[in-house]
Structure formats: C-alpha cells, structure tokens
Length: 211
Ligand SMILES: N[C@@H](CCC(=O)N[C@@H](CS)C(=O)NCC(=O)O)C(=O)O
Image (cartoon, rainbow, N blue to C red; front, side, top):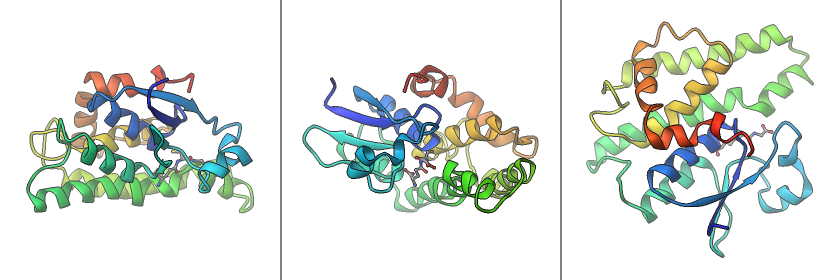
C-alpha cells in the first residue's frame, strides 16, 4: 500500500480534483473507496475519521487525516512544488485561486449529492425542478467563469494551474446532468484539451469506477 491513501468515490468531483493533482505531482497513492450511493460516508466508521462525512480525505504516512479538496490541493502544492500549479506572482495566484473557489465554493456545494437529496426528500422538490436547480447554479457560475478565463488551453494564461484541476471535474458533472454548454465555448475548449492530458485521463471517473 502506498503511503498516501485517498478516501475516494469515483464520481465525486471534489475527489476527482485531488486525483488529478496527485497524478500531476507524480504521487503514488492507494484508493480507499467510500461508496457515496450506499451512504458509506455516513457510516460510524467513516465519521469517526472525518466528521464532515464527505470525500475526499487523504492520509499521508502516519499524519492526520487531511480533508477539504482545496486544502489538500494547497498542501500538495506546498509539499511537492514541482510542477508548480500556482503562478509565482501574488496577483496571478489570487486570480487562479478565485477561479478555484468560484467552482469549489460557489458552484459545487449547491449541487452536491446531500443537497440534491434534501431537495427531493424533505423539501419535496420534483426531479424536474431539482434538475432545473442544478442547471441554474451551473449557469450562474460558468457564465462568470467563461468571462474570467484568460487562456485558450488553460483557464489562466499559458500554464496549467489548480483552476484547471477544478474546472474539468465540474465540467464532467455538468455533462453528466445534461447542462447546455453552448454558452461556454471557452470552458468547453479548455476542458476538451485538458482531458487529453495523461494526468487528467488517469484521474477520470471512468477509469476509477472501482473506487
Ligand atoms: N468542500 C468539500 C466538498 C466535498 C464534497 O461535497 N464531497 C461530496 C462528493 S463530490 C460528498 O462527499 N458528498 C457526500 C454527500 O453529499 O453525502 C471539498 O472540496 O472537499
């Protein structure tokens, strides 16, 4: 077993971010599957380790469990600086982090599994309205991001950054839920390019379905 262990679910876009970064940084890791559909994230065993009951979580060696994908991405960047996934310039770093956060903090939480379950369950929202909710929040977030990206192959400039690491999983989700992507040609082109890169392909849900 590798010393880095990732608590993972193959279709989790937050875990997908971390898988991409682990591959980009060349980190060998072992997957510990947490089946979200079967509610393994809410088991006593998992909650004892991660009281938030979310994936991803990551353990390295004898160290404590690390949670929250953006925090894990930053930890990876600090502990394994090559290849760099944040620009050197502080203003540019801030802009990349803003893109990361608009995806991970503003778009993703509104469409998370537990939110969808709460809409359909206690709130009695229909499947059609739930899908409308989903599309609404993706459209809000992607609409702004489409204007903010500065690159053609990458979200920011001419190099791969953590913004790209966040975009591709969110686009995977959007496609999975039949989002109309016509208004976001730049985001689609960036994703189509990135998905061909080995680290992104190796981390993709379809190749990690056993997790
Ligand atoms: N802010 C957290 C979000 C993690 C998260 O929401 N993970 C989802 C999968 S993408 C999850 O574990 N959902 C379980 C549930 O909704 O019950 C992060 O970035 O790590």
